[in-house]
Length: 239
Image 1: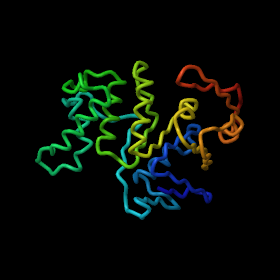
Image 2: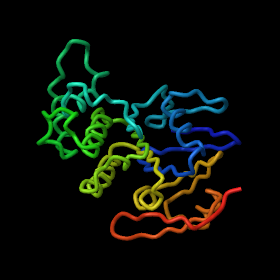
Image 3: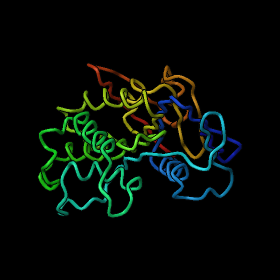
Image 4: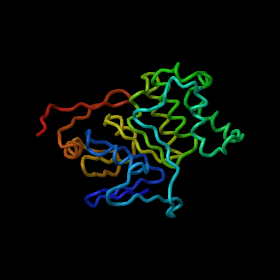
């Protein structure tokens, strides 16, 4: 998948890519995601999709938004929410096919939700609900999975498992991960794009604090502890 960015910029997302998108608030990360998803038409430039090196009109894309509009009061179970990710592939008023039911069951187990499959989403914690929504976004086996600040609702007990899941998912799908948690992004992804009113691409995730500071337009220090690095910002002033 290739996206032409304004100011003669181009971004290519490869078949097995795990791309981290970072950048300050207001820099254009959400706009870029909306353009890729087809929710926003670019004022200039193009988005092109390829499958087996051939241009195609669209790709199957899974999306986990930063904030979900799901109504937790709606009487729907964990399994039913995950199954809804296959709704477009199921004929109206028909039951799911055996292979689809098997896929739903696989994802329920993969997300660690087997004991909660019949439970109403109203009874879930924020982290549990996020796992349900992640399951819904991958059950159709998308070619590309887009995650917008996915750790916003992941409970701490599941956090390390969550990132292991992304590694597993990346074997089947390219992943685009948008996050403010720079340390975690750098520990997970294969390539980096910094969006700050324009686009800066870095092949590989071994980036320096100087590179980050230049692209963010403010100094950044990175520290790490445990399996999940974190970020610390130096004291600085904006003009």
